[in-house]
Length: 276
Picture 1 (cartoon, one colour):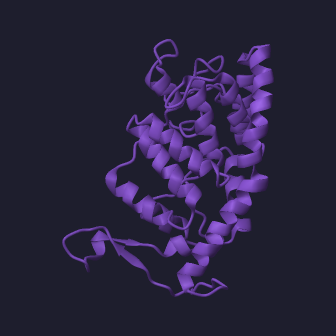
Picture 2 (tube, rainbow, N blue to C red; picture 1 turned 180 degrees about the vertical axis):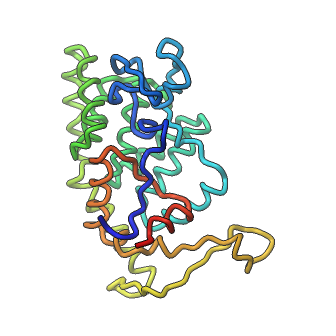
Picture 3 (cartoon, rainbow, N blue to C red; picture 1 turned 90 degrees about the vertical axis):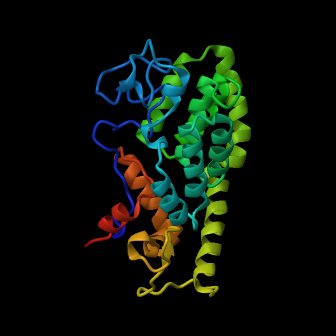
């Protein structure tokens, strides 16, 4: 695993919060089981399946982002459009602004962001911010499962079981257009071009080489520009593995395959993860 890995594994009690949905691993955050797409969601521990609303079923605990944490994540994700639009999507979902969330997640999905593709599948399944469309929900779930991440594969298969034959045929037809625009074959190169541009901007060099001793701090907008307690260290943003898309994808694959959750973390979590 790369040194400097920015990985936030799902926290205790929220193991499925960021990736569960109508077809989570059949387990709520509290550890109880549920039967299928209409019965379990990311925050199912807060309500029984019979009481859960569409908003609860399509939401995640990680949608609740404090102002300071949001500011840190926004700055840290400036070099990666998938992370930036994903952040905007989760923040909008946390505010109940589902139309905005769908728009932001769709932007992130264009940069091969599987989590955002997954969230879109839930929103179509529950009709939040978009028209209720189970066939289209499956098409997005199929795309999210493209890399065979187990959480997303299970969700896709449970959705398929819930569809009738007409919905299944429509899902397959609609999936062609979605894959043409959002599949890894076209979305990863799109992302790689953006990261290459960011790498070049960082150094002003076409080679985009970074310096290990680079010190970059950004003010959080406090009373003193030079108050270190009110500053954000942006050095992890320039970590070599984040600016090398081959290593970046490998990190993401390793985390999702192990059942974890990838986020742009706060400064303290990032710096802690960089220690040898």
